Figure 1 (spheres, rainbow, N blue to C red):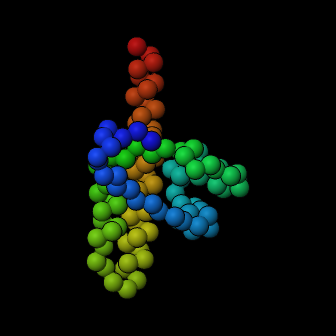
Figure 2 (cartoon, rainbow, N blue to C red):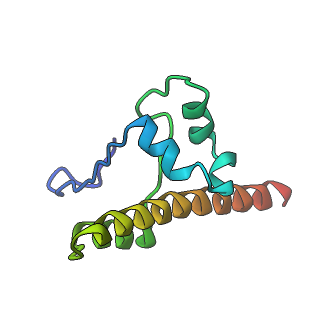
Figure 3 (cartoon, rainbow, N blue to C red):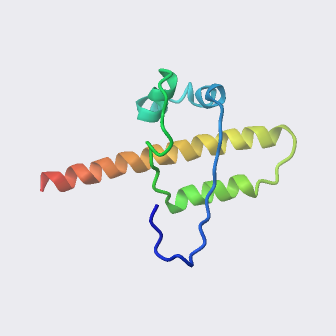
Length: 109
């Protein structure tokens, strides 16, 4: 990992999901089925830590912040969290596809 300065604080968020929860969360999402990580998990293939790197953008930070500052109560907490996790995974999928399109356009020039 490279940092711009050794004096900079490193902030990170770690989300740990069980395989069962992850697959259950995304099983009805058609966009998830085209994601390589989802396919590795569903096919029971081990995925080494760091294999899939996600470049975080402002939208992802906003979603994470909304998860952390959630003030809902009762059953709403559960459904709110599910919707935000789906939004987070969809946002990563969109960013990756935009990155591929941008790279493809650069290669065409």
